[in-house]
Amino acid sequence: MIYLDNAATSFPKPEPVLRGMDAFVRTSAANPGRSGHRRAVEAEAMIDATRLLLARLFGCPRPERVVFTLNATDALNMAIKGILRPGDHVITSVLEHNSISRPLNQMEKEGSITLTRLPADASHLIDPDEVARAFTPKTRLVAVTHASNVTGTIQPVAAIGRIARERDALLLADASQSAGIVPIDVEKDAIDLLAFTGHKALLGPTGTGGLVVGERAVIAPWREGGTGGDSSSPVQPSEFPHRLEGGTPNVFGIAGLREGVKILLERGVVSILSHEREMLAVFYNALKEPGRYSWYGADRVIAEKRGEGRVGLVGVNLPGFAPAETAAILDEQFDIAVRAGLHCAPYAHKHLGTFPQGTVRLSVGLLTTADEMREAAAAFDEVAASAPSHA
Ligand SMILES: Cc1ncc(COP(=O)(O)O)c(C=O)c1O
Image (spheres, rainbow, N blue to C red):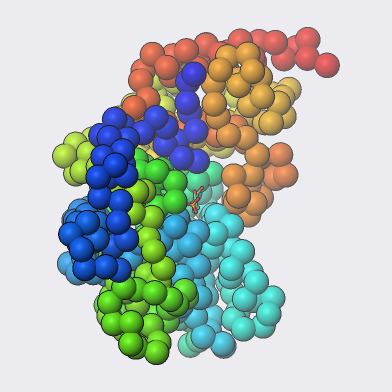
């Protein structure tokens, strides 16, 4: 199988990730923080060590402010629902995943917030000047993706973050497609709330993710419950991470995530980004006639600028085929896994002009090889060549 769906979840997981989970399940599978015995203490130490690695990866000076969640959706909901108060105004964009759009749309529908959804420009970027213009005296939050899961473009979060700070608002960045691929420094990038997922480029298993909460963010717990220590307190404790970590965490998953983050720190995020861009270039250059496909602007950047400003995913359509049809042919006839459709981001596809059918998304990862990309290009060419006789 050629797996080109790493933007959905990374596969295969590196061996150390699998071994890390296996070893942990077999030897120290206790409930962290809940009991005083050695195994429970060991489990808690493993979780805190992972917190520390993530804090290093994201330039977060206070590791206790890296809060574990179930996935990015959970982290985004935690941030949105923990920060916003009735009457607040929020600035977001058309590039967002439903994990940002839906909670905000629902709050707007209920009349508790007002919302400005900014367009993206022709290069699929949010313009910081537009963000500045959208501010009202009630704006509390700017919620934007760091890298779009549809267009692959990396957004100018640092510029947006500075604008938010100047106006006493917070920036929530959705790093689902950037964490582990694009260098992130929450301090330098002026990110107050960084939502990430563990199962994509951080190489961990599903059921892992987190929220990095900056010092400027005053956040109410979204999920309350057991935290292990201080059981006598009638309400959720105020200290991090317990404030936001009610309930038993995904200990096995975090044991895998720890190994994934170690790999990233050892190899360096920048080298992973250049590997991903290189893989897309290999694919593009191996196509017989790249001009016959629809690329939504990505072809020029991949061919002429070595993928600058992009992560390793691209949306492409083949003339004469619906995206879902292309993906089914690639799967059934070539054993190539891609994702077709709207990618949980309907506004982004309206922006691209690909709504409602969407695009065929190819997304590469750390373990994708050049040979796989050449094989995938040959398969695309074969499918495209069959188009004229296509009923
Ligand atoms: C940009 C973006 N945001 C949020 C999510 C949701 O991530 P998770 O599945 O970890 O909740 C995804 C995953 O596809 C994504 O690509």
